[in-house]
Image: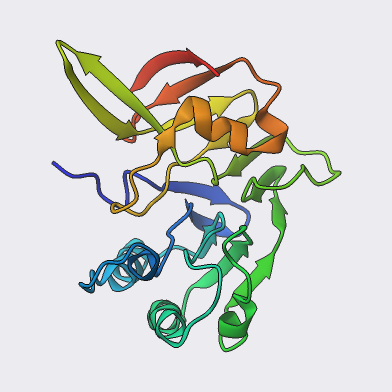
Length: 213
């Protein structure tokens, strides 16, 4: 059974209320990858958000995939944000999110920042150094963690959540984006390069062990 958006997201209780968190949707990935079909991914993701009906949605960066902002990509982003215009949205800006403000400025419910600190929890993308502040736990994306199971000559790559100390790395919420081997993905995050091992969890919540990174 394919993973659902819910499997690849977190639903937290914060002082802002029911807080839905996911990472790296990469809207417009079809444009970067030469796909000639329209997947409707952004509409499906918006429908999921409305179904959960959170008080706030936090997107941990890379809302979009193409680095620029073409007419087609702008249309896709406008379609996504228009559907969730009644939900408060916080975007921790990622390295793919250049010019995202040219879209979000049309939506007063959307706030874009490098990071957010809520109740001691830090929410950020993960492509830059840590901001100089105290926090109890951090949630980030960018690394697209995945792990490959191998048995009897058969291998299967699955998305995972990776815990390194007080940092939790979320997999990409996009079902069309496979993810990186967690040992390589962690190296993309500057402040995680000093860690030597990561604890891995399947999206269903099952702990599968630790790997050296």
